[in-house]
Length: 276
Image (tube, rainbow, N blue to C red; front, top):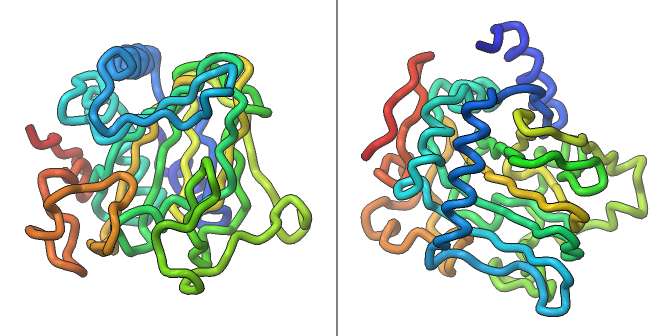
């Protein structure tokens, strides 16, 4: 179990930079469940799955969302790992709720990059206490890993755009700032990135700017996203990514995310069971 002093150091780095690497966070048994869960997901994708690479790409990039209720191995990764406790510590929150899971697999030779973006503008939540864990099932070299702009989680919110065709399909034009030219000013926008092995975890705030290149080798990843005490429901007038059909009818704007879709997995230093 991670010591309180190590948790405090990681939390301080997370608060400063918006992203950290946690070396050796998960043991071999959890990694085996992770791989089993991803393979089961790939074999039987949900209706929410989508291909995120073009037909001309020599590789293949597939994503799927919100499968924790049906994928017993994903549930085991949450139940049998320190991730809920780590999430609460990084967020500075007394509680941690599971927001959703997100599988991302790039076949060997995939060229499709994931462009610079923030995650939270695509979501249906407001609040500062958020964390996403990017959990690799395969070794990921530095050139294929996630990269982050240090301290970008402090804002502002930036206009979300579709990855394949760069279209603004969500917030009305002019309501959010546009993405700056990050690569043109490395002093103003310092970039963080780490090669990772299975067992390592990347953790980042949902407002942290991040991107990823293609991958020469197969790259299987599960992202687990958690929300803390200050996060509230923010219904949108469009389909969010992921979408939660029917949620707006039972959870009003500004409400705590107290719904079976978002189980409480950590509270007051005591892990909670995920709802059946």
